[in-house]
Length: 32
Image (cartoon, rainbow, N blue to C red; front, side, top):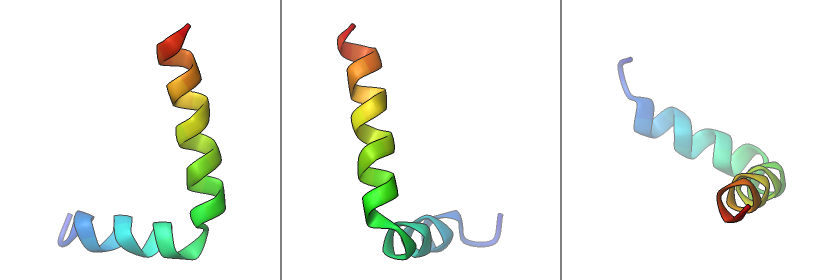
């Protein structure tokens, strides 16, 4: 809990493709 923003940014840089796919799945769930 020291820097949740930094960890989030690091994960995005680690695998931006995985995050994009995960966001797309969440978007589809919201659209349904």
